[in-house]
Length: 277
Ligand code: KIV
Image 1 (cartoon, rainbow, N blue to C red):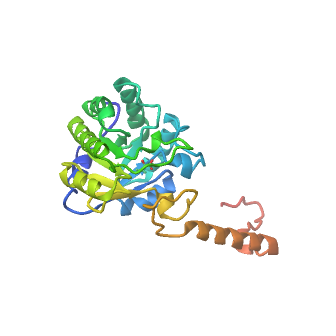
Image 2 (image 1 turned 90 degrees about the vertical axis):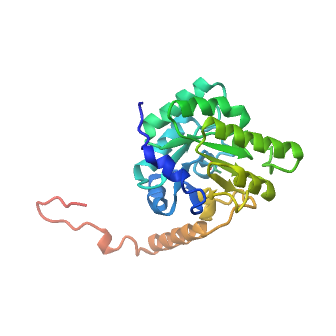
């Protein structure tokens, strides 16, 4: 295998189901991964970084190479949390072979513990191709952000009989194909609850139900840094946008009034010796 998956990491994660609530967040940079690692069971390098880091209006323009760059940064700092990298749109849907090539590249080049892809029944061949190659796969059902392109809006799932049946079929298909966990996004509460209670692998909710085995949020949403778009399921646990704006204003003030840089930020000359930083 051109990559290493620690044998117990995935089974330890799966064993959390029923033991405690599973805490997951997205991370896309090394410093963020270093801070979040000890607080999370899983860090997802989600392709939502298209919006939160790059300012795109959808995940459409994400590439495998961009995801690999961020995956590598996050994996380099995550010591205990599982690191999962999203397969970006266009890198897996065409065929199981395409999915396998893309996932192997992610695994070989990032040091991540697995990949995530969106879709249930329709992606079952892709998921099976990856799991049979030893690549841990996290599924993603319900609202699938990669299929939402502006002006199309995010649509909550599970409001019709047909949609409810499809969600159950999707979950079952992913479990049978060997997914080790399933993200349930934007699914009405009682339906998400029923899915979580009947699913043998951990379900991770986002805009779904408290009954899911764990929860995930996009970190920039959770931190109150990104508010271009705020779905109902987002809660700001901080106001990082305000904190950054305040620091920038203090900095501007200090530069303008000449109090920064102060003497202790400057290098003094020492005859004949070049000073270390
Ligand atoms: O890309 C992402 O951040 C995700 C989460 C919303 C689950 O897929």
